[in-house]
Image (cartoon, rainbow, N blue to C red; front, side, top):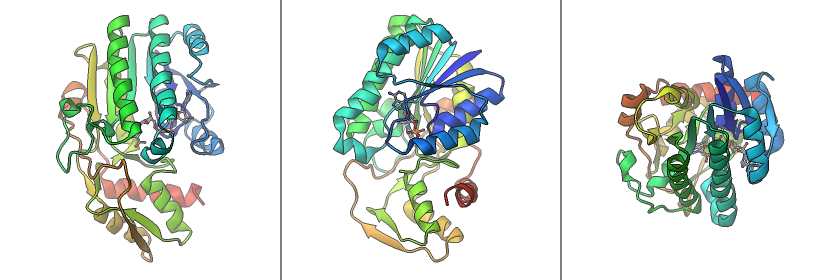
Length: 314
Ligand SMILES: NC(=O)c1ccc[n+]([C@@H]2O[C@H](COP(=O)([O-])OP(=O)(O)OC[C@H]3O[C@@H](n4cnc5c(N)ncnc54)[C@H](O)[C@@H]3O)[C@@H](O)[C@H]2O)c1
């Protein structure tokens, strides 16, 4: 089976491409090495995880014609579309860029997949589409467009295009809403990546707001869920939460970090605009549809990430 992973040199994309290739899929990764974080880091993670076994095509998906041509040439059975500009804070500075990278590029991929007669498109959306709901389990049907950042608005808009193009072209559409993914090669701008780098350098870490919680989800669990969903039964267009289903408060995260960095110093700052207070995935739907079952408890996942960071993030 032939599979394209867009955003294949990114954090989640590199892990997914490596796993699929190890399972015998014929995988091609597509990435434009957007400078949101350094291209050199993306090259390192892609090489370290795939071991050079996955071909990488340098292509900007904002170029609709090139995207169509290349999809038609490769003729994939399935496309995982992960390429996007991630991150809430930068979307407050550059909202229009998110319309380009998170919506327009998605529409190009959806059209190219349709023209190439792809059977299944799987899209990386985000828990941010639920907006700020407080500390309650979030069910798929609760998203109603009332989001609190341009990043979330772009993801919600992109989801709508996914439903529309699945209808127009008749392919199966699976939309994943990931909940704060972490692990080895985790994105360097996210909280855990930032904290670990600073702690290893003996620097203080900054915690924004109070009473926050995130449903941190270990990368291997996300990848297992994404691959299990390839063969899902059920209707053409479906949305699934992929989370741990077990929110971790900031105070719990600090307790776990202190076990690895006993001299840790914490600075408090006001909450940042665009951030939600808490996320908590209800994962019942993914469990039923394709047996999704997160396996890595937070303390264990964090310990593995610290081991990785001490070796690679110096
Ligand atoms: N990491 C998380 O916790 C998380 C949570 C929710 C949703 N997501 C979504 O999952 C996806 C992957 O996230 P990630 O954390 O691996 O981010 P990442 O930034 O590491 O990976 C995204 C990759 O897409 C590439 N890209 C961006 N625009 C492109 C374009 N026009 N053409 C080709 N390549 C392009 C980038 O160069 C990058 O390598 C994103 O869509 C993100 O919004 C991630």
